[in-house]
Figure 1 (cartoon, rainbow, N blue to C red):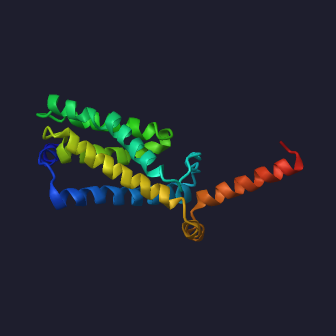
Figure 2: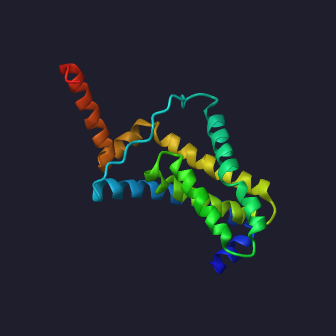
Figure 3: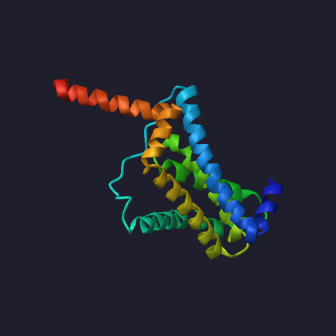
Length: 197
């Protein structure tokens, strides 16, 4: 615990900061894909797909929607860590605030199961916030860093839903929740066609 606090108190700058930002995005993408695969294929649990949204992706204003969403989530879930860090900078109580913030971030993204995915990303963003200025009384820099990282992650996730070739890769890769989603859709259409509702 003490080593973590010591590491967090040294503000990241320059190349080191950019590597931390890219590492957070890379880790989250790998974590989500591997976690989904392990849970759905090995533990045989069904992971419902993310909620459909009516936000058109191919518009000029979509990047602004992604940015504002990331900014507000960072203000709500990470910015209070600056105040808590000022109060608790000599002991490990900041870790409790990080855990609570991460659990709430994950849960509010879709329920208990999403704590495993978005909650872990929220934990990483909390650490990044503190490392990039939250512990060093530079909260606006930290907010910019975590918002940019969050925006980059959201852009990659949103972009992964777009191209036709990506869907082909997922279908060939055997991601079972996609198959289950398609099977459920076909069953529902069949029931509607036969009047079995």
